Image 1 (tube, rainbow, N blue to C red):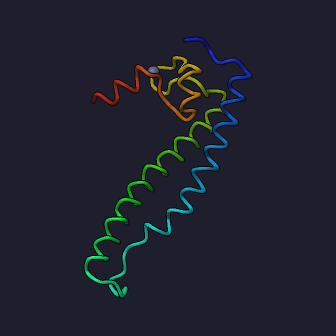
Image 2: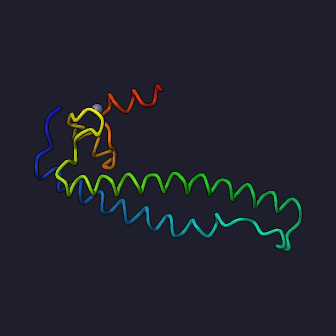
Length: 118
Ligand SMILES: [Zn+2]
């Protein structure tokens, strides 16, 4: 896998900043919906179940969004340490194509698929 050029790194860095902004907004907007459903809320039994279902959905989304934000921030930190673009596991180049699709990806494709198999 070819090493990233300076220009590619800068481009991906800009992508990361945009992604971080988007993730933060998403988290801010979804925190409201993920609040526990109060028992004293004047809603019927069915609508309470609806509310609880919606709540667990947004909590799952929230968890994914938080994980993604953490990965984005880790990638930004690795950029400032000049380690961005290298796999956290094996140290190989992750590759521009993969990073363009997922700028926060911490692993190369090999290591990622190994992890998913485990
Ligand atoms: Zn790797």
